[in-house]
Image 1: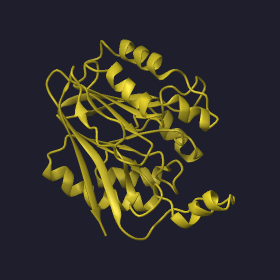
Image 2: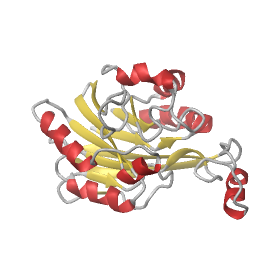
Image 3: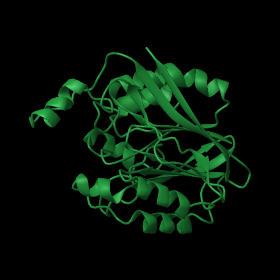
Length: 265
């Protein structure tokens, strides 16, 4: 099975990048499933249904989440619906809207997709989260009897140690553990010893010549002059598309992971 995971889609520019790159890439690589990180889609914070529909029209099958997943109330109904292909982190405390894992089906079978939020990100966002290792253990135990051809775990975190450790913790138990949130791709994509594909951070889709998708002009005064400035999304200049392509076998384990980066404009 060929599974493409697309890094954080950042703002309108990120959506346009996906619309530009994905249709041809999906055909050329014979991709069976496309999963994308969608928590930064609408003006950099959260996502609304209309923007998710645009990504679906471009070829995205499923959306994962992070600390901004539930920022926009318009998305709550979709997030609550088990039939809709979008999740928020599974280790949000009980009582939050949305679901943290769902299945998506295609011609190859059912795929379990799970999102987890790093504990450091949760604290910084004033959202204490449950322990991600305990949560994923519980989910995998609950879903063990459900037939599936692959399990994809997205880990949305800040600390590289968290991202690396969970990859090894789940090695041989899931198809892939894909890290994101930094918006910067790391050079460590590999299949771990027991057959789980792993990358610390897949990167982002959006403006290339920017601070994680935000204009330098809106960031530098905060650093240099200690001014309170709003983030302004960069819409000009070169653009980037970052993803990983995971190939899996009949056992639901990875045989290959390849980073894909396209820079243009």
